[in-house]
Image (cartoon, rainbow, N blue to C red; front, side, top):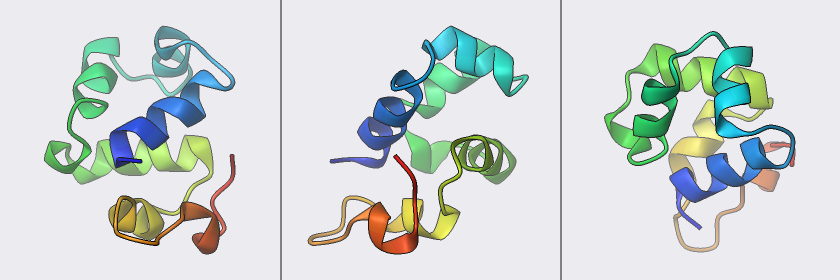
Length: 77
């Protein structure tokens, strides 16, 4: 699972994308862009999303690597 897929899955478990964007005070377009390519997002936006989802930013950076699970980093689902 890619970083983008993982983030979207976590968000959609509790909110719509628009509701989540409003919750973290982020324009929906910015969130939508991040969910298309996390690696091109600015660090402050990634931190904001990670904090709101209670996931490790370090773990997120390793997501998608062979055999790696965010749950190993203490990420929540």
